[in-house]
Length: 134
Image: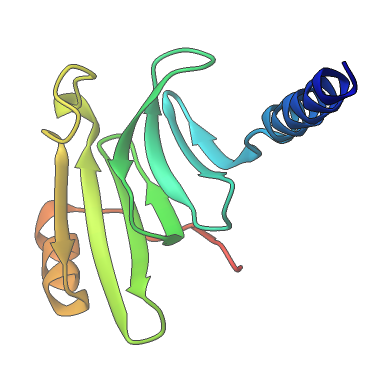
């Protein structure tokens, strides 16, 4: 009988351990929003761009760590640092072509800084209006 009590106590402690882990859960937040787009983080300081479908559901657009964003009526631009401080990548999203059913159809990139500067001039891409430091 004592052996059964000890086994129940171990099972009870294990159950409480898993409950604590579940309650700790995920931590997240958004640092920039525009329409259905948001730059947010989940459990890490790395920021990424998502297309929000509703309050709980979103579809990824740019998963690399984002350091800057800008937008105009047609485009969203982001500067990423996938291998900080050695490398920068640039992306832009064509808002009118973005369709939640085709997650990356409207996403263009990655581009080097030189390529992005040329595209910015030829396509009328916006300046970066907000920088993120982490």
